[in-house]
Image (cartoon, rainbow, N blue to C red; front, side):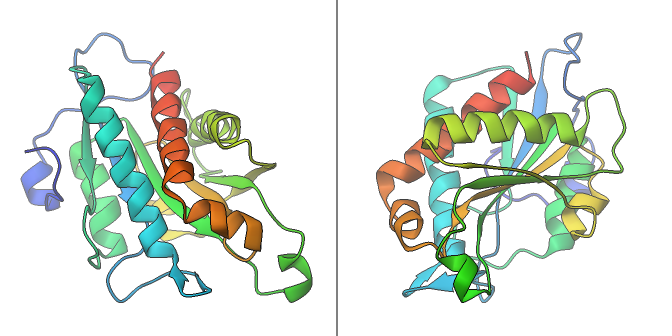
Length: 212
């Protein structure tokens, strides 16, 4: 149905092409809600990162389905609270030959001093990707569109080569750190439905820009 996790073997025959390839009619991309199941990610004030990530991705799913874009197919790693391995996440993108791989997360800091000041949106990318339509280009688009929709502080790009899904993705990949859960005001925003919808809109805008 295009909206469930496929094992790599199931997805192996699915066509997909990189950003900017307008010859082919149909593109696949992967939407990934970070963490899930027993892997909660960051946790602050009883709020778990996995739930915020999933809420943003599900808001994006609803928005995307309303647009009825027949040229783009989205596969989601999870649409429920379940533990999907890193190997499965990146394996799906690679098996699909996905044009884009977007992973949604929230940021945090272990420093109590930094927690009082660090806020905003940051996007990680694959420094090793030197292709024409690279991970860094995708990350730049995501950062611009997310900050615009969320009215969040631009915390810039960060090399993410040490992160498994970034290092092993064959598709241009961007890992979006939507905001800091350790900054109280931003945590309240991240946990609100309206802000999550704005994040979803930012992701949607990023995808449209990437395929222009």
